[in-house]
Length: 120
Image (cartoon, rainbow, N blue to C red):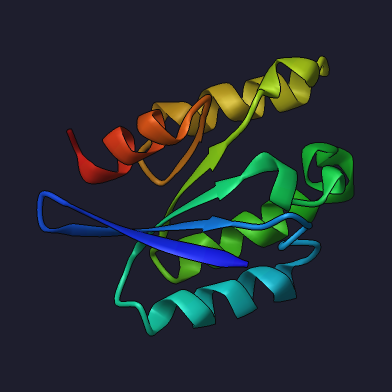
């Protein structure tokens, strides 16, 4: 797992990437939050490829469990990926509604994630 810290407008953003899945469960999300806590950041970029595919099946509740951890610890999250492949109405609605807020965003690029999380 690689962590890059972006310092933009006095805002620190952790950009987490890996060649493998990082988040398979709510516990993995908690572990990740624990790791970035020591980096003094409250904004996080993670990539769709690093999250279990089960996250995108809303029927199993994994997305809610994972995102609740970020909400509880007040860490803003941008998930970067190509979400057009998810054809279900519920996941499309979920992404749309999330993107209306400021806490969880689904974006197409790292640049877009940094812009949203830095308040540009």
